[in-house]
Image (cartoon, rainbow, N blue to C red; front, side, top):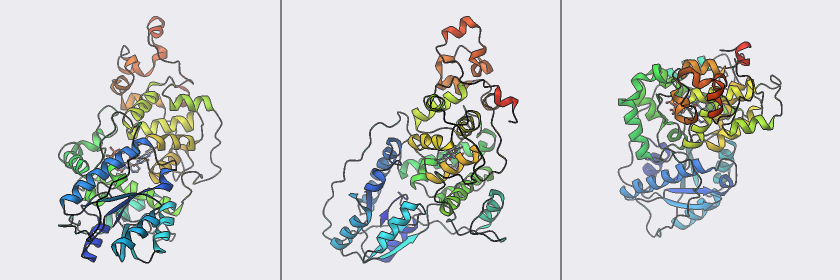
Length: 433
Ligand code: FAD
């Protein structure tokens, strides 16, 4: 059983199939050299991943098994372990990224029966196709209708017992590469994910529709990194939250982006609709945006949240992305990379599709510019979000916190906060909301 982004024992189709298939199972995770050498390997996700592996190993041990952790080229490691243990079959979660497809092709070269099971999304990419023709849904609403109508199979229980083959010697896992992460990163692991899901279902879920856009409220589930690494099953999250349609709709957005990225493997660097937007080179503006120094409080507060927590509120992601691409006119690929470098939940389909959508190159044919000031007035009217992340502005109350440049000159001089990079009222004068 080769774990990848399904680091759990509950409702894990690959693990379930492996246990049903043979008397012995060897649970394996490989720190993949190709991923470790690439841009996806950043401290926040490496940290979340190693905590999740530790948790998985504890759970597998409690079931009589273990987790064999190696570092190297995945197919080579899998081949070596199979040869040593006499394994004849290999089970893995089906994944649709370019890298995952190459990995699966390499695994299929081994003298093993390879089974790739679904499990990373509620509905696997490619399962739903529009009746009007075409290999995928390009528009969300019909996808959502089709997605909602898919019959849901029962969830799979965790295995009662895992039996290792005899002679598998004790393992010294390689040191996880985990320094330099955000100080307030949420902890990883299936136990933690299940605790968070249970607390969300009995706590925040009922108010989700009312509170999810309130920046200071923390009215969203924060389950995204658990879904990213499969420490929670997306089907189980759906099962537990099915009473709240606004929430399950978000899970459908996630699947929608996965089917889009499966069909457009270039989504993270090529415009989905080319030739629609002219970006300009502005390294100073980009640096100010990344470094929380634009002088526009709602933008800088969001960046500080990202650096401190490895997470940014969805509404703040939308406002900052719109600001970078549509107000500063900086190429969305720069913003995508910055989010990729910091987000614990950062993945290619959701990061790229959302960036393209906000920038105007994505699947929304009529994107609008979000005015940072109007958004701030709607979603942080008392300035609490800005005060939390920019304490240097606490002397400015309510909406004044969003316009420090309008403060009395004597007060302004004491604030130690930069002047705005551009006139933030500018997008308000254009067509915006
Ligand atoms: P909740 O509101 O509690 O939603 C529940 C779950 O639904 C989330 O955990 C997530 O899996 C899914 N979801 C929610 N909103 C979206 C959405 N717009 N698109 C797809 N799935 C969604 N999400 C990622 O998981 N990874 C990313 O790399 C990522 N990059 C983004 C970049 C930009 C520019 C924007 C605007 C959004 C991005 N999102 C990304 C989507 C969204 O912001 C996060 O999923 C959400 O903020 C996670 O917080 P939560 O778990 O509390 O969400």
